[in-house]
Length: 164
Image (cartoon, rainbow, N blue to C red; front, side, top):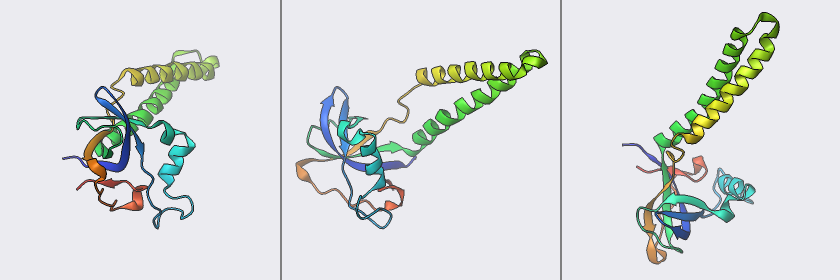
C-alpha cells in the first residue's frame, strides 16, 4: 500500500464533493527558522495560497470550521512530478532533434527551434488534457469538536510526514 504525505488543515468552505482548506501553521522546529516557522507555510504565504486555501476531495463529509488531516499519495505525487517535468523535457529535446533533421543543413538551427517549440507546445497541451487531478489531495481524517490532532512526527520534510 502506498504511503501518504500529510499535514493538518482547517476546512474553510465546502463545495459539492470538494472542500477548501487552509493549511494550519506549525510550530517551529529544529529544521525551521525560529522567527518565521515552517518554510512550506512561508512559501505558501508568498504565493498567497494560505489565504485562498487548497481544494481537496471531501470523502469524509467534513464541514466548515472542522480541523482535518489532508494528504496526497506518495505515488501520485511522484507520477505527477515525473510527467510534469519529464514529458516537456523529452518533447523539447525530441522536437529539436527532429526539427534539425528534417530541414536542409543551412537551416538546422531554425528547424531545431521550430521543432522544439511545436513539440513543447504539444506536450503542454497533452499534459493539460491528461488527468490533471491524479495527485489531488484528500481529507484523510476529521477532528470534530476541536479534538486533538496528533503531533507531526517528522519535521524533516517541511512538517509533512508519512502515514505508517
